[in-house]
Image (cartoon, rainbow, N blue to C red; front, side, top):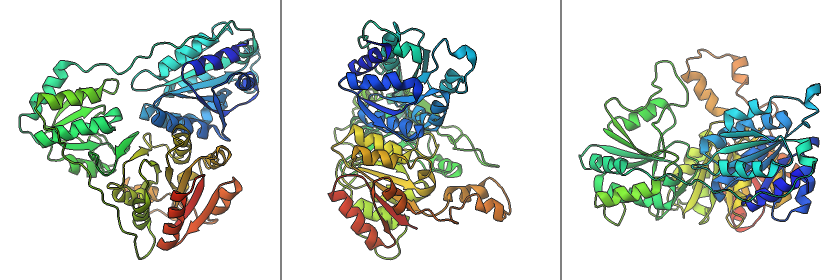
Amino acid sequence: MNGAESLVRTLVASDVEVCFANPGTSEMHFVAALDRVEGMRAVLTLFEGVATGAADGYGRMAEKPAATLLHLGPGLANGLANLHNARRAATPIVNIVGDHATYHAQYDPPLASDIAGFARPVSAWVHFSMSAATVAEDGARAVQAARQAPGQIATLILPADTAWLEAERPASPLPVQGPSRVSQHAIDDVAQALCEGRRSAMLLRGSALGRRGLEATGRIAAKSGARILCDTFSPRITRGAGLVAAERFPYFAEQIVEFLRDFELLILAGSKPPVSFFAYPGKASWCVPEGCRILYLAHPHEDAVTALEAVAEAIAAPRDPAARAPLERPELPEGKLNAYTAGQVIGHFLPEGAIISDEAATSGLGTASYTAGAPPHDLLSLTGGSIGLGVPMATGAALACPDRKVICLQGDGGAMYTLQALWTQAREKLDVTTVIFANRSYYILNIELMRVGAENPGPKALSMLDLHNPELDWVSLARGMGVEASRAETNADFASAFADAMKSRGPRLIEVVL
């Protein structure tokens, strides 16, 4: 048994069952070990940003880490943008990054780089394996680090000789540190504050946005009148008919300020105080109103769900929660196809148990509103703001939940960052329907150009935000990677294509021309 095989066996024993890979020469012994070890599904991606984005989607839905296999520093660097998103989502991921053999690095070969330097900004744990004898134990520690609450990225750097030299055995799984218990003082402080009659809101994130957390928060709201809020971009929300609904923050800073203007108490459960995405001349960065008291019920590494249930009991909240969403399916739309009528179609046909991977940007507002009363489903968002996550995230979610329909809502600009994920969906026969909102523009940047005070933009500036000349042909792009595709130019076109996709299995792409 060599070091690579001892590592793969350790990962499998530690319940890491999927590896999203884009390997090179230094990773060939790990690749070969995949044939000798049962239990690890190897998924080839054609770009490292797809591998890391898919690992993010998988981890959010499976609630355990996948592995990535990346080639040296440049391979890791290609995946950093979606590792940034994963870090912001607190997604558990184990990166295995190959490196030159330990004795070869002294010669400064062309692919030599500071891999640890690339890894540290997105990783909570970074380690360089120095011996085949310790690779297995290093792998077990990587999984342990990734699974530490609320979820982290662990990066293990694997020199080629530590992979091919002889190793003794795989390592046993290490104990996982789950969420910490919230102190009774924090629970008592929140319960007392809620009983003082202030205009209150509870801002939820992480596990608090699952069914149990929402149910407990709904009970608190029924007793105290507190509003239930979530971030503009949350890692995962369970939502839909019959579930307690959280109000989503608007995107722009001045909208958040107005949204929170009258609150006197903001209680955080797994979240942090809201700030604007960017700085703008003359606009606020800190969005909490002056004089509003902020109370931390649970920090991200703590057990927010149990704490919310304890608060509900402490204030004698009723068993029946407030803010339960009714079943409200929109009617099929008439008139011109746009992002809002497309949202009506999606809400009309959305199946129970679906997973929505949302990187629709400006085109997603209609779907967000028209699916609020659809059958229960999970919503995954672009947590770190680095575009190019939607299609890979849907890919990973489909691998984590093969019995659930996955719908990817994707802007055309962001889709071009990682369109190679379509090929992986075809190769793995994944049940993903990708809806491309083709407005032929980085539309949000047209808005931001005005908001940041860049006055009188000319043709050069405007051309930097435009996707015409030539127009992207998403039907041809998808078919070229083995994915069935169609174009919708009317509401009837889209309704027909989307309804058919919901009734069948396998990867599909629908280009919605806006």
